[in-house]
Image 1 (tube, rainbow, N blue to C red):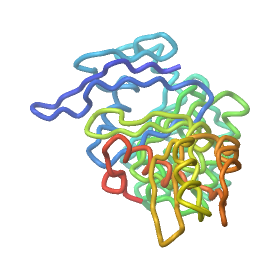
Image 2: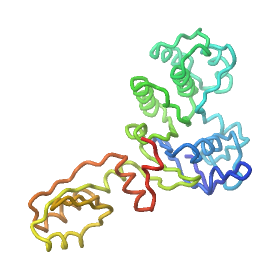
Image 3: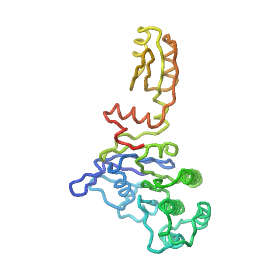
Length: 301
């Protein structure tokens, strides 16, 4: 488990991370969401032990991570601009990382290179941006660490390659308990892979919730009431987060389970009623609007 408690980091007069507290449980995919400049990269670098917090603390499996080689052996960090040695090829990187990470799986790395059609002896500086990101992710996966930090690592990957990496994540999580932590500015990029999402804004955590809880506890309904009395009666029984009207049609975003909403509507008369699915983006918009934010301005889709 990774525990981040009241962590703050400033660079001169810029406060990049401001009192962040969040727990990252094992064997889940944790999505760290936020615009460029929200503090995602700084937070990941502190969690990886690359830089030291000004205040607060970060532990990985109950070990302080900064300046602690034992803790760092459980973490592989893939930055937004992956670094490779000059004029090296994938096998050179494998040789180096095998010395740094005792559980590096050379056989698996060779198999993944073939799967993604990455030539093992080709100079990495001749790779495209997407190929370099693929290679960095494969090196991280094969390092055998418990935690894999990915900073905008899916940016530049085409949909097929992105899906391939996500499938490998799922396989590694099942087989050895890998815990990926993925930072991104794109909500749609995280929707189909993450179990838990934290929304970072202006250096602080605005929202941190399990996606299943988010999806199960907020619904969107459309209905036409028989009378104003029925509408008034229903409004007293449900927790409306957001509402819209178009003529007699009412659209409510409502907090509660599907069963709870159906039960409330069963007690009033409607001409028309249905519960509609909400995308993760719509859920986040509803949750953050309640907190006084407009996620459409915070997150680029």
